[in-house]
Amino acid sequence: MVKSSMNNGNLMVFAVAVAAAAASMVLQTTEAAEYVVGDDLGWTVPPNGAATYVEWASKYNFLVNDILDFKFAQGEHDVTLVTKENFEICNSTDPLFQLQKPASFQFLSADTFYIICSFAGHCAQGQKVAVTFAPSASPSPSPSPSSADAPPAASLPLKFVLSRKVGFRKV
Image (cartoon, rainbow, N blue to C red; front, side, top):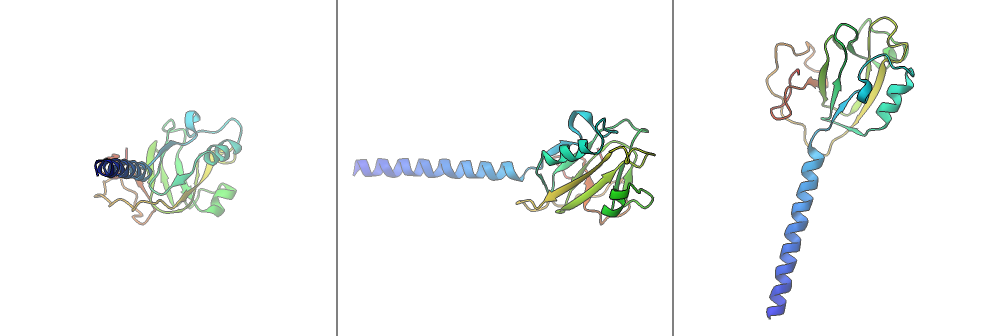
């Protein structure tokens, strides 16, 4: 009997360890990842043309709720969300969204998003990126109250990131 209870005790410890490891993996996969667009290059006219951002985006598996951080010199670039058609021809005359300042965005739906710089010639020189977000295994976070700097189109599937702890806002 003693041997049997020791085996049950070991089995219980093993089961708890497996459950803790599984919970840890679930917690790790539900956190949003943050990516600096272009890594060390940032958001700028790339020296190697459009292939630079195509290669950058292909290195990652983006999921819904992940965050893209656009780092650039204010006044020298912008972040302009456009349709696929406008992305392909570098047309920024009717953007879905545009921001003149560096910012971070959390993407809230599975889709491909097309982002360009609207400054003259920048998109044609390769400052454009198409980023596809796959569905996340975790539920979407609850939206927090909007800030005064929120984009006018509340239905856009992205939000400014305020804080990783409280939800969303412009950084």
